[in-house]
Image 1 (cartoon, rainbow over the protein chains, first blue to last red):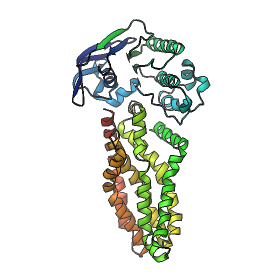
Image 2 (image 1 turned 30 degrees about the horizontal axis):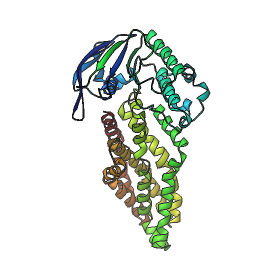
Image 3 (image 1 turned 90 degrees about the horizontal axis):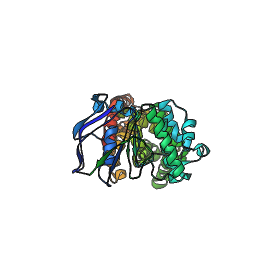
Image 4 (image 1 turned 90 degrees about the vertical axis):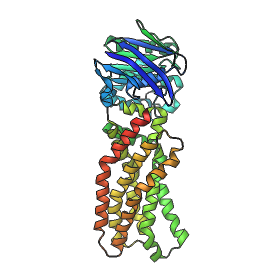
Length: 199
Length: 218
């Protein structure tokens, strides 16, 4: 279970948000909404342990999650603004690193996002939506229980959004947790919503 | 760490032109000296250690600003930091990859270039013996510098300003070892100093780079 207590973040000189508290139970999902610049991405990076909170605590099963950021990194799969793909490598090669870390098979992840036919293509030849699907395939390869997704449906067509829904449902069914920042409705059932208004 | 190393080597194969650039730059710079100062064997031979060391140092810098810069820009750095490998491990893997991709080819190219510059044959093994820890030191200091400037504006300009002063002792001891061998003196003290520098840098540079990478992600 992920519990945030009174989280406050400052970027540069700007107070991004303050005193945020929420709980994401096993199998739970939390949607972050709010205007551009409200701090959704910053909160995701903070939950990933990439950014330290100015105040407050982040607890993982009631222990300080950020006391060992390397260990916390193993609990997290992050889909950021960028797809984190190397254009010169093929789709399959881009997934190889995540597959090696998790010990899972690339084929299943490619199939889950309907990318089998693109596996041997260099990523520079993929469209924006295909790249997003590939980045989602990397997340699906991960064995991390907490998925942090920044605009996961960005650039996806309707069938891909359906596949995203199935992927998220599978993860939650296995006890996984999801925190997603989005401006568009996601195919998720029984979600909590946290609206960020900026500080 | 091995996964990161494999990833880096795979990328270097795919971006072969970038990988070859350092060696070609090294060959080109060294080849210019006989044209600039004349082909007199005695002059060239005397200057050869310095020419090769300076050219190797500059060539090693070519790929450094992209070492973490590309990962920072495309979001891969976040993925590396969340991979469960500590920052020091990421930096160590990147350093080893840089040395294998840049340092080893420079080392292999140095001997024929030394012959081309008419360096005394008895001094060439010493030149290579110095370049072996020297090239590793360039990768270690270079990786630490690259991690410190990642995300900064004009990182490519900052990087040499930061790292060149740090690698000056490496240059001095490396050239001095080859000069000593060419003059019939023992190069041992200089090589031992290079080795001592390497032993100190081996844990410290990846540690500094790891901390810098985590700071860059914030």
